[in-house]
Image 1 (cartoon, helix red, strand yellow):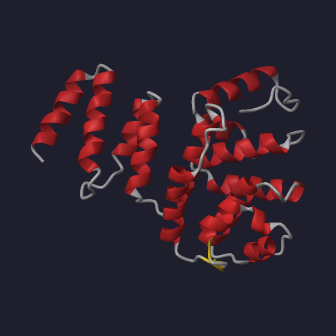
Image 2 (image 1 turned 180 degrees about the vertical axis):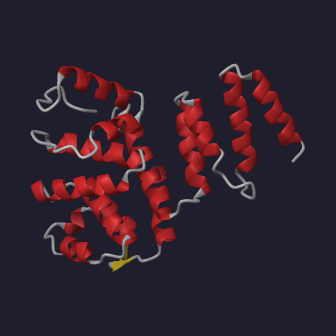
Length: 231
């Protein structure tokens, strides 16, 4: 995810950071870069840190870094996506005026899809969340190598949750990704957030049981299975 020429990092810090990214440990990366001065970083490296901030639910930090990136280069769509999303969630329309004055704003296809409808700004958070969720299913990320494609799937899903925290389908999708990656504890935490009234609840509980078995926690799996049968 990060280039090998990271002058601002010590050798050991670089190795720790890169290992954390490769294991989808966004929390470790975001803690390392919290209140960092980001000197000597490339735009690509800064953009990747933004993704780690979003994927560890650090929207405020992601927004500060997005603002810095845009000042350096206002053509980075991921930075604008975070910057504009933060402004909507905080009822700050001034940032959109800045974006709409860009000469190349029509080139930002994702932003125009997520935040606009026929040129009009969408002001409904649930609709924005739905569009971010749909983005995951419609975008072709096959050109991105592993793990970068996974990073982006989680990036859009996490952005959706900022607009709709109880979005059960998004929580389920995130959990499935971590389950496929064999990060069963992360998957379980997400499955447990799914509402008991939702249609995906039973499937989520089944997956928790499967993951318990995969982790050889057979006693816990048996208890959960009994509880599920009784529902």
